[in-house]
Image (cartoon, rainbow, N blue to C red; front, top):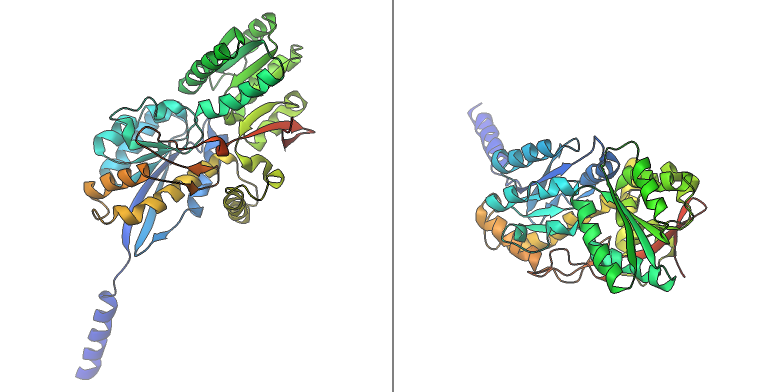
Length: 382
């Protein structure tokens, strides 16, 4: 009996001393409910597809929903930083929400990977923004493609309808500058809220200015409303959209009113038409396959922004671990430094090359000119 008890004790001791994987904690905040849910849901869903281990370390993702509300975003960020003591943050979903929490990431020295549209989360670079990395194309990269198409097709006057927030404001600044440089006159500027159910007044003012083309600077389902309103009022010119409209729900919500829309966005929208030589095609195809296998639908490009955030972190973590252990400020600081050194990292949206001045890292390989034909996204070839 003594020998049996001793054997049992030794066996239990052996199991208890088996080393478990040390843990890295990453907080994720998405808007999976509320007005921005069309963008936030694929981002939340993507968390399950992110890498679970790096070397001898496991990765725990702590996911919180901010219901598209800035106050809740702040609460969630503070909880993740102070209570969960995360090593990095992914999110939040909305551009205004991201602008509202940069200070908390910076104060705590926690790298933040923002899957949002506006470049103002990383530009102009400041002491606070050095902690933020952006996993979508900066507005100017997208805008240059659109303005290039406008010039080629002799657009001389342009109307603008955009969100009355950080996303819309940055797009207005970028388009004002590029339009002036290309002799395109901005003849109407109108703003609207993400939650608005009508933009009739704004659309009528744009229509009265008779622009050759109109650009809508909105995201998700809210990008549809200005365009459908203009079409119903009889507008016949070309409508351009930003990469914020790059989701299939835009097609289903807009129907015939969004036919012939032009936008510049990720290759994911038109992946079968992309040449195999594109370095991101395989990465995008792998992500889409994993998402569809898990959820039985294709992901929106917004989900890929979170997937790329995971790829960036996994790429940076091994070197950062040489400077400190997870849960320490030394590790978080080293992780930030390594993210900033990212070079030629192929991901689903393009190729990342980060520098101290550029925390988005995309070049023209991160965009395609795309249009809507017969209710489907198609590569624009003219």
